[in-house]
Length: 74
Image 1: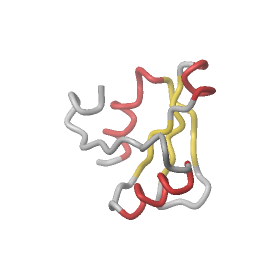
Image 2: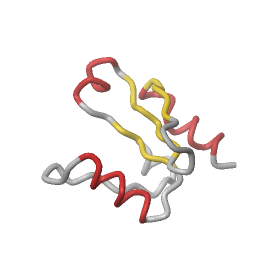
Image 3: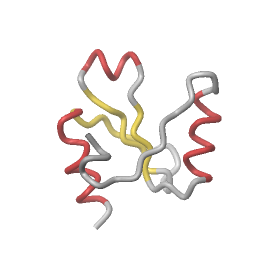
Image 4: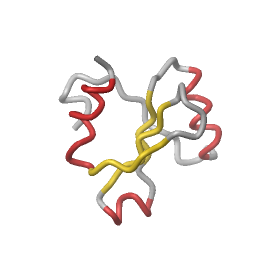
């Protein structure tokens, strides 16, 4: 769990479009968005999107997200 690992998290609102949710994350000053849609959940991964790099995102196994974010944010 990201919160248990000390990360501040912001959850998307299901009534808003995906694009609007990414704009909100970007506007909040977040460095990364962790995206878990139906497809990602079925595959046991999250799409890790660097909000500073246009279009850059990578699938990361769910159990490795906290460690990966810790390395990226050092």
